Image 1 (cartoon, rainbow, N blue to C red):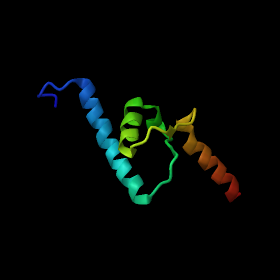
Image 2 (cartoon, rainbow, N blue to C red; image 1 turned 180 degrees about the vertical axis):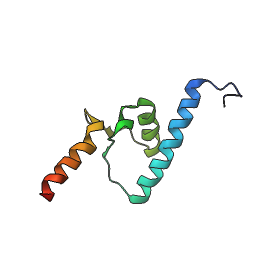
Image 3 (cartoon, one colour; image 1 turned 90 degrees about the vertical axis):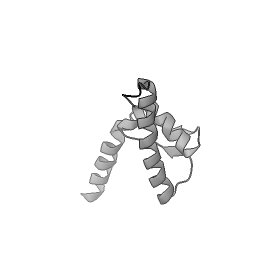
Image 4 (cartoon, rainbow, N blue to C red; image 1 turned 135 degrees about the vertical axis):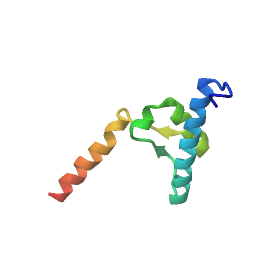
Length: 83
């Protein structure tokens, strides 16, 4: 793409689309029921979020205020059950 003088924005979109495509494939394999929540650091990446929405063919995607903290919160809550 670089040698073909593809615009940087188009290259970034291609990367986001490729990542979203793999994740959407896994989500469809496991199965899901809308609404869908997206957590983790990628939830802060608007390019990925757009690609993910297109891949799931939805406009409704729940993203919490602090998506990158959800994994840590889940681990902390799980840890309280183990004690």
